[in-house]
Image 1 (cartoon, rainbow, N blue to C red):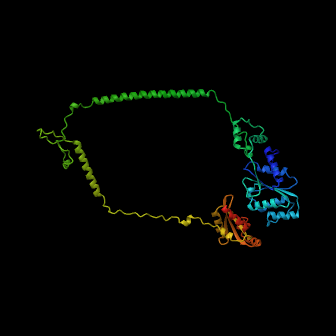
Image 2 (image 1 turned 60 degrees about the vertical axis):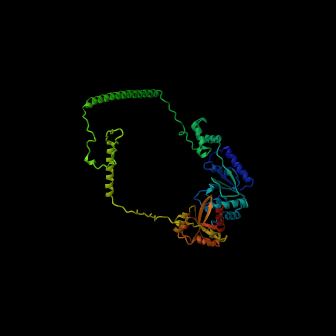
Image 3 (image 1 turned 135 degrees about the vertical axis):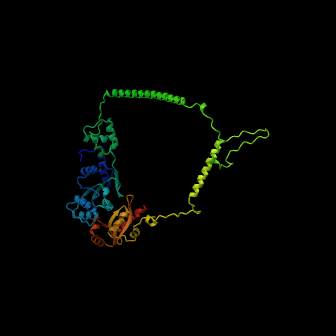
Length: 456
């Protein structure tokens, strides 16, 4: 623990002590991780109320209520005889009768791991204790306590952040250092982040640039530009040379061609008709010009060669289509209807709905004074269902549904016993596989209160 304390933290310690003196016996210190809640608790229990019987407990998730009760009472009394079958308040009252004391101060860190039963016991003792009893809890989130003063631990200011770092790092950079300023802004007043400063890792390495390197880069750039210009000029010369060579080749080809005067006359197309085209219908041939009797002359006859070739092509296509249609098998006039095949892997509606194993109605019908044995509490219904099937508790166990910290919980219990002795005998008869989860007793009235949270 550090020898100094920041001014804001010292003022908060005095404020907590003042709240106790005003008559508030239960105080909860809230703050996110790393703000120094544990250090605040250690400073408070060390500097304040030196005449009190003090108890400081670090709560963890692996500690159960019985061990926590033992730690608190052993630090408050001298060699106490603790009955694990009784609650914290009952043991506290019995020890007061055996060892009277003046005042007690209990400080519990990481109180978010405390169970609701133990929180209710602490709240009851702070309210109805026959002696002066101050209880201080520290947690990262709000606790299920109604009558308690909640004090929020604020982050450090920029000035106190630098002051805290100066206690641990004697050679801090100047405030104008950009790396140091960025580190302070990102830490946001969190002491654990501020103390993670690494001077050797947060220093910018400044390398002096070589004054000759820019000349080398400039010369390299000039050489590249000169090579590009030479390449473009060479490409332009080669393009002109290929164009000239191509033109010369074309002129030589023209000189060696046959002159048009030497070409013999082509016979007229209307004098020869192929035998293959003898079946052309007259409707496909072009109409001959009609003689103009009024003028006493006949128009000259012309053979339309493109029209003849078009008609020959059309007849060839028609014959090919007819041969293809004859080669194809005749299909049925009525097309076959394809019936849709239904999938066999359709999920039934019952499989899509989850099996609700809640027995809330059964608990509401039980007497309030009865006692049951709680076996398991989880946040997933599937786990509680597998737990019951695994231990063959389908005919014995009951499950109720409740809500804690805005989450739905599933709790499995065993039996409903009129007396506590019957519940103890049932708990001792449980197999070792069930007792490893550390089952405990619970009143039916308490279960009804938890079921009522679902409607809130």
